[in-house]
Figure (tube, rainbow, N blue to C red):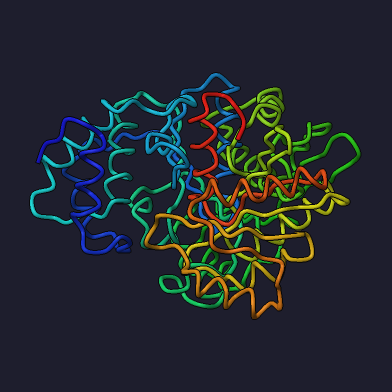
Length: 428
């Protein structure tokens, strides 16, 4: 199969495999062994977790780049363009590079069926193998044990947090989900845990395979002061670190786990304290507590489960305590709608439910049911598209000098940023 455009390749990939999510390593491992025959690969850090994966990759990328190293970063999903998933030195790869990688994958795939995500992972690994990288950063898409990223043995592994999400694939308890995520751990390899209350099963998995277990609050920790913070692992202490550019108190936990991973690889890839400071100051990640300084102001956040919603609540209570918040909102149908609504409703004056052209999105009936369960009547339905929901929120936010919050889904944040870009720099 051959296509001349990236869109052609992606449209075909979406139709090729019968399941959008098909966990398992046999198929992707077989294709990878044909695609990349060299045993030499860049130093690798793999990141899994329910929330905080993207932030952790962003911290790692910023710090290693500040050190002057050549860095490849693979993340998902994208917000605006597919190319965002695969970056080299902070820049999304070009269409031509992706198309060439897909050509090579197709040339060795034979009759093995691959999912959309598996194609993406193989393309990233193929491109990175040709890019003369110093380090590659891999974000797990779903779970860990059976995720395509896990075909690579990491030199350090980070698990950011464990909460209830993707229960159809990972289980419906934190202990069950933790076992799936712990699949990225390897024997005699640093296993960094950034969850302040990790399930016992996560710790057991690390111990059972003789991984080098490093837990926040135990083997490493951090303390905050008014204008800076301190990280220590008992042997090394970094004082007067600048606050992370990424907003939210949870980012100190993510940054601490990242610095711990970097410290475990110091003999292989030395990183200076100055590079760590610069990385913390310069890190950037769209869609996470991203404030757009328009009139009214717009806050973007991709949070889509209760743990992320709780973090968003804490941020709003600190930064927008006395501000009327008007939320443009929807979520995918497999998420905990009542759980998120219940947590968020004390902070939100009114909700505006945006439709999305996505088969995974919650139906209006399901959304109405979830709001009814939460006894929440401060909600408006019936909008024809995102822009109509946003404009309704804008009118009310302007009237009471409030804030527009766009949250609940990567796809919803993408809608806003797409509309913003379509205005060629003009605000909505």
